Image (cartoon, rainbow, N blue to C red; front, side, top):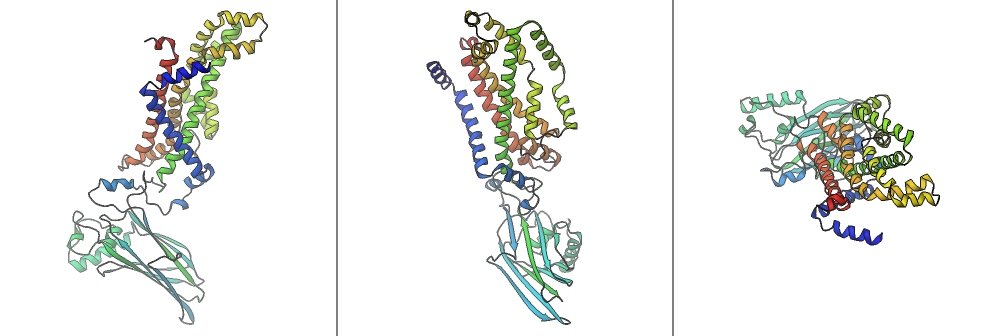
Amino acid sequence: MATRLRESIKILFRYKSFIIGLFMIMFFVILSIYAIVIIPYDKAIRMWNSIEYWEDYPKLALPAWINSFSSKKLPEGTIILDSRKTELGITKSIQRIEFGGVGTLININMRFTYEYEDFPSEIALWFYVNTTEPMLIIITWVKPDGTEVLVYREVLSSYQYYRLTGDLEFISRFEARLISKLGKKPNYQIPSEIALFAKEDETILDKETVTPLKGKYQVKIKARTGDPKANLDVKINIYGKVYGLLGTDDRRRDLLIGILWGAPLALSFGVLASVATVLLQMIIAAIAAWYSGWVDHLISRINEVVMIIPFLPLLIMISYFYKFSIWTLLIVVVALSMFGPGVKTYRAMFLQVREMPYIEAAQAYGASNARIILRYMVPKVLPTIVPNIVLAVPSFVFLEAALAILGVGDPQAITWGKILDEAYTGGALYWGRYHWILAPSLCLVLISIGFALMGFTLDRVFNPRLREM
């Protein structure tokens, strides 16, 4: 038996298709191990479904390697200016002053360098206000050429989130300033990012000629309140347009995390579903072939009924009544597939095995029915079943992805199908964010090709009829 196995393995490695398929599967296995070791599943789920965790990541960012092929250097990642952190270029001072009594004056200065050839994607601010009295906050933006722009002037008493991008009041105020300064009106609505990062000359009036002003920028924040114990911290995020190896989605999530954790879930779902389904079908077929009579008729009728019932609509209908986790979904899929078409194929094989002399010998020395089925009949056809198990894996991987796109499955799980579903609902194709779709799609295709190459080679080696061809 061991010698036969070694010979079979030697034959397998003579086929380039098997080696290529094996390397492709090993790549995803290594990817799965890396994901499990680096980011435990519970932590990955919390990260993936958390809004706060991803707030510092750019939204719908392209992969960073795009810069290698782009004519201009796109801003990468996020420039984070946070007065709560003692970083180079950030200073903060608090003074207690006479302000109709006693008050507080807070000055925060932030400096950063911008050397990119395109504008940021968006700008957002967080105000962490600790005061018992209203606090007047004034923010001035200073460009490298010394031009100052009033960004924010509001009275706050508590925490505030402010998204500067899309603020129509700021945009209209800035356009009025440009008309007053240049005597001309821009031929487009100037976004906040261009207002803060472009030079205020003739080039800013046309969208085709406007370019970012490179150099050192400064943000001046002044706050004044009547509370002597008041405090203020400000965080400013200047989001880029590219990030990481695979970019981000519309919830700012790093797609690399989704692809990494999608690998072990796809492999485990596909392999477990395939092994369980094929083995159960084989055992059911062996029981039908061995017992024959009413047992065979009953199994055949169940098999015919299952083949008539549409699998996917039935699964979707069940999902309306019960919410699945990915492992519950696995059990349901196996349960609905165990009486599938494979039962008839394996039954035909077992009918031939049942007539073999060694089966009659086993009966003669008093072997039980269970022993004959599991020890003598199943092992005989097992080598021809192995290719079927391998070839069935891609179909179950694609099934999980299709079910996720249809909204059937675990809403918390990180799967490639779920990423594709979110890309579809988020309008990835419409907005031209092809990286959001290509990464999970490519993984699904590669893992399927890997198992298909291995499966066809195994079938050629273990199937006697194909071996002779």
